[in-house]
Image (cartoon, rainbow, N blue to C red; front, side, top):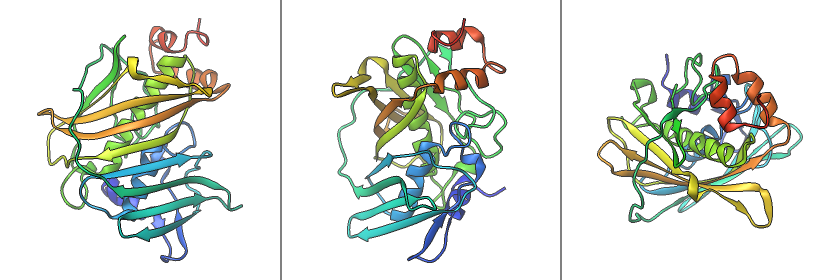
Length: 276
C-alpha cells in the first residue's frame, strides 16, 4: 500500500496552471467530508517550504471526497497562497504557508483518563479506515490528550513523520476540545499550525488544555483552542491555534452514528443534551 503522504500528493493533479484536488475517501473527517488536517497538509505539500513554518487554512464550506475540485496556488519567495474551489468556483478553502521563526516552547504534554469516541471511517480515529491513523485520544476535566505511534505508512519522502499525520492529530484534538466546551458538534474552521521540528522516530504526544478554550466575544458559536504536539522526549514539534464552530443539528447526527461502537456514558458526558 502507498504511504499516506504519497496518497495525499497523488490527490493533487493537473498542470501547474490548472491543478485539481481529488481526495481519497479515506481522508474523511465527519461523514463524506475531508478531515481538516488533510487540507492543511495539501497546502503544505504545494508550498514545499522546509524548516519551521506556519500553515494556515480557512475552511469556508464542506470539502467533499472523491470529487475533482479546482486548486490554484500563487508562489512567493517565502511560501504559497492557495484556494480550493468547487465546480461553481465557490471557494471552499483558502490558506497559505509562510516561514516561521523558532519559538520558545510553552507548556508540556498532558494526559487524559477517558477514551474519546471513535468512528468507523474517520481518518484520525476510524477503526475500519485502511489508510487512517487509528489514533485514540483521551479526555478528563483538564485536557484532551493522546499518544500515537506511527508506522512506516505515515513517513514522508525524507523519512520523517508526514505532515498530514501531525496536522490531523492537532485538528482532531481541537475538535474534541470544542465539543467538550459546548456539548455540540461542529467543524474546525480556522486552523493555524506552526511546525517546529521533525519527528524521525518514536511516538507523538498531542494535548490541549480545556481551560484555554474560549468563545469569541463577537460570536459565541466560535471557540478558540490551543493544541501542541511533542515527541517522546518532550521536544515541541508543533503548536496550533484552531477555531471550532458549532453547527446546529450536527451533534444529534454524530451521536446517532457513534452509538453503535462507543459507550453510551462517554457520549453522554460529551453531548448531554442529545443522549438519555
